[in-house]
Image (cartoon, rainbow, N blue to C red; front, side):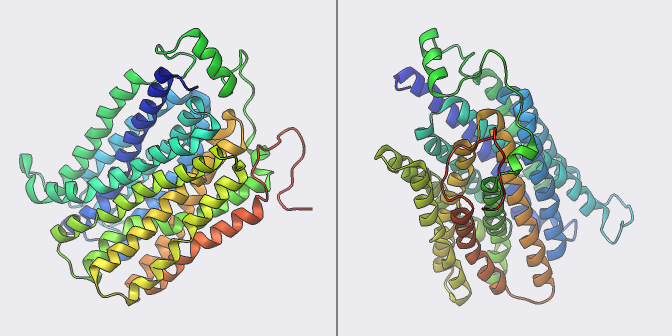
Length: 448
């Protein structure tokens, strides 16, 4: 697996998938950054904002699981194509939200309900993104390179989030084509980016056994190191069999905890900067990208550290856990934010947290590739993503309630700063030794 041609192909594939992930994070950042402009046409309170975020996360989490099963059934190439087309159209659909003179339903304006429907559809599509990415890594990369490949792919989250603030602010302040409100163009343009990527994906991606850039000798070598598909496809591992193992529950619960913090940062940082420091939109856009840039560096560093340890003879168990622990240690610093009065220091602390979070996330999303065979990777990755999304819903609802009832951001920052440390403890206790799980013998959720 060391030939230059093969290396070029697989790292080009990692870059291709990374671009898709970048587009997904650009798409999900559209609402937080365009919210102040949207609110001029469609009133949105803190609790309504939390409701819209939850609409995205509920279907995102469910489709993370369903997308994993879809990818296991359709394969990476066809499955990712369907997923990307769906979420791109869902993103564009936000542009058509409005009251249109219609009455409220259950106390919610019709425009809010249209936004909620679009968020539901966007989550439904984007939920398949990381399961597809995980399958692509499993298809093309050996164990010792997977964390680095996932790091590159996960860095796409930072690229999309870094591009989002200045791009969205530019569209909001400059684009008034066809008489449409600028915030509507934010969604139309970002949806277009996803459709353009789909053409690139369909033309460029093939699994190793079909890729035109590989010869027969290279395919045989890949089959020996990558668990290439057998002549007869083995049956899928039942969901119940995956859930019998306490190790899978440990990863799911850890993701629930850590992603609660992550989605709070992701969806509420723009509002925090605008309200806590009374920044205007252009100023917030000029500095709001910095923590996301730090998160991109974290994506690469977490995977690189784990891969470096593996190459020096450290076990998979030791390499993954050391890097996870180092990442979690960076997160509690956000508890200091309420005591800081300088926006520069606040951005620095959030940058540290974003770095640690995405280093952590890269490693957590690599764990399924270490624990289950390829035919179950999409399913386990989906379960992990579902847990993370539900964590985001839970903390997001708490934030919305507290903010609309007069609370500052302080209690939530204290909670968010502690969640990764708790998640690391769950992994250490639930997975005493990281290994490939045995699906041929009974397993117990709790130790005997």
